[in-house]
Image (cartoon, rainbow, N blue to C red; front, side, top):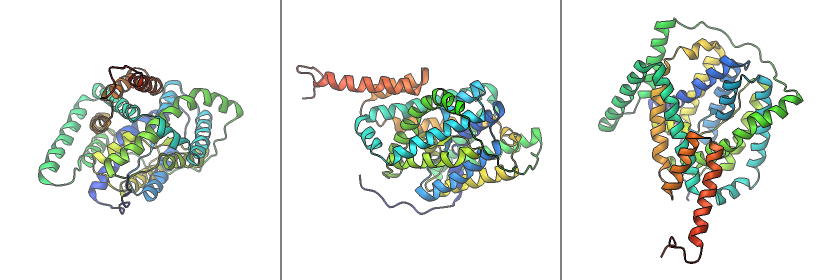
Length: 375
């Protein structure tokens, strides 16, 4: 594929709206992790801000950052401490930094069928829909309000050729409602950093509990699927090894100081694009927002005042965007099976089953006398 010139950074209202497009995923995960474990919320936010800006300047595209979801879910479920989280981030940082300098992803791209990667994308879309249902149950009024706002802006933007600013309005309504219910959050300056130094036992525990479940998800969704989606959305061929390198660097420089393990993500890219992001300017906006919150409003109360129903509405439309692109596959049956398996089981099981299915079908078609062989 020919490589188009990278776009210049833009700082329009559309980019600002797009910068908020993945907040429905990031904020609930960060807040839940901070509430159940001893991780350092201000420094999680700080490093998200720093790396959002650096990523936008480096790629010049709205390449997102997200908490590593498998680690976040396991921490939320089990209350795992900051030592194990830091150990997992360091292990994964080393692994992905090394993989970014080798031929690993060239081999992976060659041997992993497109239908499998698209299946992982579809699975993520279905998981986003399922996550949004939890928000519907907890906050149906604001969920429906968010759906109405996004739908109205979609129609106006489509027929009047104006930017879709629905994400700005949705987040703004959420903040206004939160302040009305809970008051203005207090100003609380970020404390001095403290090194998080894992002990040897943290590394062994983190490898089995956190690293192994996360590594397949990162390779498939955060790297391969994100690379494929950049081609869909921007006609840019960003090699997977570049994503692997930045994932390695951001974790090695962040988690020792209290940051949470981070990666890129196809869902985040779809979300930022859906709400208007077209250049790395959206990342700079997102980074500035996180830096301001981290430095001046480090209490968990700041993130929790946004009505979760509105975040759920954002997730619905991110899932639609992701699902739409996942159907651009060379085998719809394999893609759908993988997506369903990811929803009912796990990304790891879906990936393994999808690989076996894709290669099994290819082997059957190549057998002499097979009725499935193309004429």
